[in-house]
Image (cartoon, rainbow, N blue to C red; front, side, top):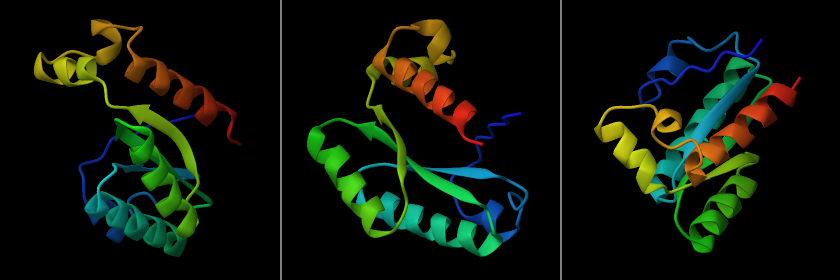
Amino acid sequence: MVIVTDMEAGLEHLSRSTVRASDVLLVVAEPYYKSLATANQVKTLATELGIPKTYAVANKVRTPTDAQAIQAFCEKHDLPVLATIPYDAKMVEASQIPQAPLDLDPDTPGVRALAELAAKLASIG
């Protein structure tokens, strides 16, 4: 069984051990230093909580340089990148309506990348 929970940004859920029973934790990282530094803090807390598998999801990636920056940072901090979600204007539009991106346009690059991520998650044991 896979349960995906989208929590508010921040470290409170980890500091309160809310996710302690998780088998996998996805850390969303954007190509900005503060986001990457926070991703590393989350990875450290996940390790302290004994969460067996922690992965990064590169988000809002606009250029190959963005993807390389996230990949290099994550490699340096032993945080494997499980998926890369491109910046997608349709995803922004969906959040403004509000509507699920899948309902707005199921063939947009962001939705396709999320579907690939879901398939990877389903195969992680």
